[in-house]
Length: 222
Image (cartoon, rainbow, N blue to C red; front, top):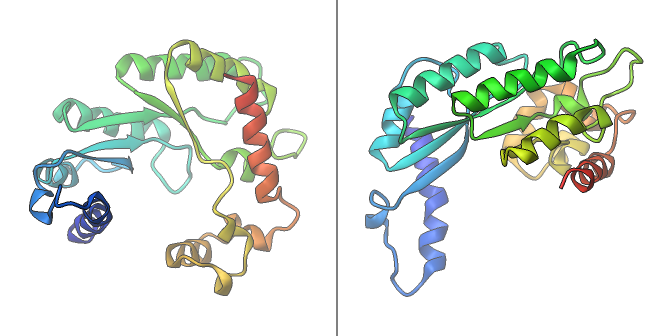
C-alpha cells in the first residue's frame, strides 16, 4: 500500500513542478482531488479504497476478461461491493466475455450482460488485449478488434454514451528482446508472461497491425 501511495506522490510531483509560479506545493497533495483511472479491486478487503479516500483519490476499477484474474462475474460483484460501500470513491468499468464467440446468440448475450452492468452503475466498458493477441475463433485465426461482429456492441455503447476503454496490442517494448526494453516494468511483465511477449511470436500481428485494426474499428464506430 505504501509503495502504491508513494508512486502516486511521484506521479503528482511533476504536476507541482510543471505548474511553476508556486501554484502548488507538496503540502497541497492531500487537498487536491486525484483520480487513479486504472485499478483492479479484485479482493473484498477495503483497505486500498480507504487509503485512497484518506489521500483524496477517486478510483476506477476495471473488469477484464483475463485468466489471471477472478471470473468476470466475480470481478463485477467485487466492483459493485466497493462502489456501493464507497459511492463517492469508486466507479467501475465492465467488460464482456469472448467465450461463445462463434455460437449463435453471442452478441445478444454480450449486450445483455453490458446493459445489466450499466444499469448497475458501470461508467465504461473495457476491451482487453485478448482481442488481437490471444483469443481465436473456430477458424483458428486471431479475432481482431476491427472484426465486424463487435460493431453492434460498440454502436450500442455509442448510443448509450458509454465510454469504451481499449487495451489493444502492447507498448512497442513488447516487440523487443527483454534486454532492449526501455521500461523495467515491461521487462518483468514479459519475463513472467512470455505468451504476450511478441518478440517471441513473430507470427502474431505487429504493433502497427494492432493499431491499424484499432483505427479501422474507431472509424466505423464514431
